[in-house]
Structure formats: structure tokens, C-alpha cells
Image (cartoon, rainbow, N blue to C red; front, side):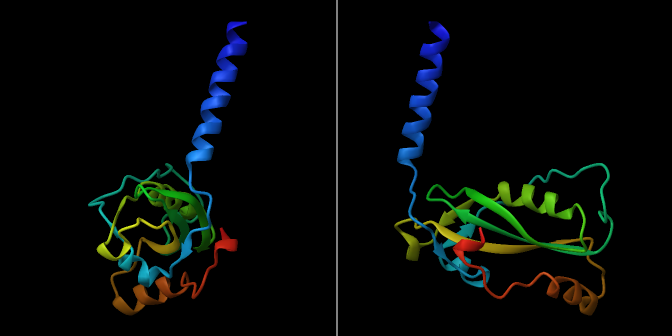
Length: 147
């Protein structure tokens, strides 16, 4: 009987949490406009970096989409593009999970937004080569349906 009560209590609290979350679709904001709604507060982010993986030491980038929630945390994180193909996407996803934001004055209502960022990895020193690597991960437009 105790196990049944515990399960019911856990299910009840999960339901209450789900009901309290804002289920309206977030506003879609291009990455270059994100700072008009939310400012990143992190000075550093811990990433979950595996000891080995495919193309981990190659110059590359990963485009990751996410929702900035009303409390400034990220959710609905998805790797949209990784160049070169490999395990850098997992690292980028872990970085996005650790991002924290504060609403700007223009976003006093703390509106949820869907946006994306490009995370660079192992970029070469040459500026032109760096730009060439990062350009491969540019995505002009994403929509909420792309989450």
C-alpha cells in the first residue's frame, strides 16, 4: 500500500509541474536578435567532453537550437547541424544546457523564446579559415517546428 501511495504522490506532483509550465509556443528569435530579449549571464560553461570521439580534434562547429524559459534556463535543446560530422554535437548540446540568461528591459514579461547559437571548436588561428569553418554552420532561419 505504501508503494501505491508513493507512486500516486509522485504522479500527482509531476502533473502539477506540467500544468504550471507555459505550454504556449515560444517566440522565434534569430540568433543575432537574441540579445534584444535575453542576455547570457554565464562567464563560463562546463561542457561534457568525452575522452574520445569522432572528429573531436578537427576544426568544426555545431548549431544548437533551444528555448530560453521564463527563468532564464534553456530547454528543448537540439543539435541542428555539426561540421564535420562527429561527436562535437554532444559537446555543444551540453554547453547549451548550461547557458543562463537574464531578461532585457524590452522583455520585462520574460517571454520564452526559441533561438539558436553556433558553437566553435578547435578553430584555426587564421581569421579567414576561422570564418570559413563557422560559415558551414550558419542557418538562416529556423522555426519552432524545427525543434
